[in-house]
Length: 196
Image 1 (cartoon, helix red, strand yellow):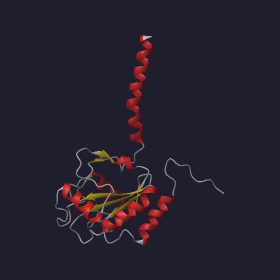
Image 2 (tube, rainbow, N blue to C red):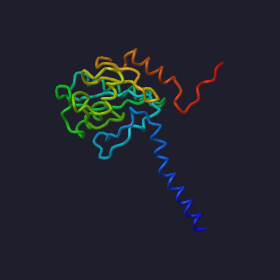
Image 3 (tube, rainbow, N blue to C red):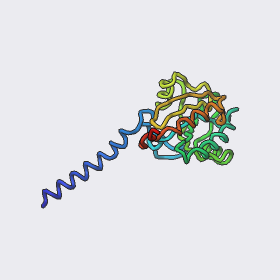
Image 4 (cartoon, rainbow, N blue to C red):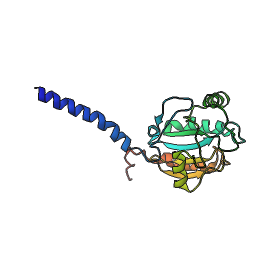
């Protein structure tokens, strides 16, 4: 009886260790990073966004493109129920246009633009200190942000499929068409639609 209990306990412990490994293995290399939510203390895995269509944007509060927050929030709000998310990454890399603390950035975004989409810790999007996820985005597209509000579009499998410059507004027809096409594709866990 003791041997049986020991075996069961060992199997339960093994399962507990394997479950996170299996979930982690399903995460794309691009999203396999941990970053703190803006003004948060504990890093979280970006793998939590796996299976969604994502628009990753380097943002700044004191930029001529800052009003794009409004369109990004509207897009996020409208498309989130269909498996879409905007992810914001504040960066002070372009003429110091994001100088505030993370708490100040968070307050500005919420109070000025009503931002509810996920925002993460301040990052570097260029130079020798480029944050790993932005290094991967650059390598995948051959494009690095030339300014604030550069946008990378990621499919449900976690692959970067397009890059859009800062001047591309959230309501740009080409951007919206690409997003709609990706949202029309089945999620990785969904079977493909039956042929007629």
